[in-house]
Length: 291
Image (cartoon, rainbow, N blue to C red; front, side, top):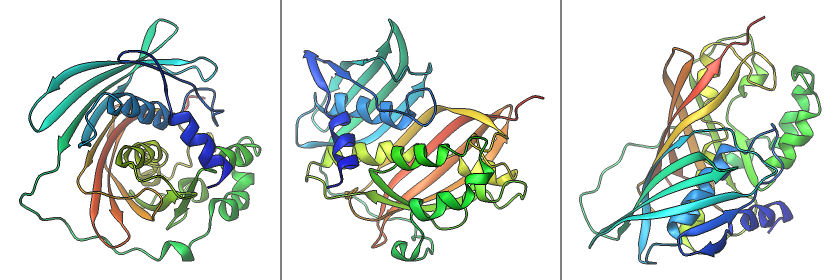
């Protein structure tokens, strides 16, 4: 296991300070706020810690309410909404400086047999043939407002091996493209077999690139290029089938709409052998900076 992955797993190992109350900390971020994927993953950890072990997460719905302070602890309070025969529902509020910064509802289910179908996995190249972040990012350092962002991005993403199938938005700024993007990702090391851990790590990664397809449609390079500003507003995920986050997963993303200073991203995550594992939908603020 890489030291970076070990650090991320430590970040997800929340401190329990009272029944239904947990405390988490933040890692250094590329931007001066808490990374949304981190707070979403930590909130799901808090919810999962209050659920019987035979029930796995099948969905989450969340809102980002305020910008998180990376220098302060985050307190997660879990409300045990319902414990049914098949389903368990939890609500989690993340608080900093006396104010809620994030709200999550999550549902867990016991295993059941049932009807089975799925879409076919889209075509995509072998992830091992694609450039790593360490190989790709330095090529475009001159595109960024602050060239030092390359090192900060590499440090922030060192726990995850994330590889773009096509060029990322910052590489093609100024040239509108089809609003669709694919990345392959996996944890940068072996994980324990706990299903909650794999779901939480996928939740963490899911906030990294989902809004890319919005930028591509308009030829925008992103916040590091300086031609847009934005932030996640909400985030929803449905976990369809078991998967391992330390094995390659294809994140197939697209944007059906952008309007009113907001953009919508939707995606599916597939295992390398073609099983549809997760569906993700997120809306974010995407604004063009004023002169």
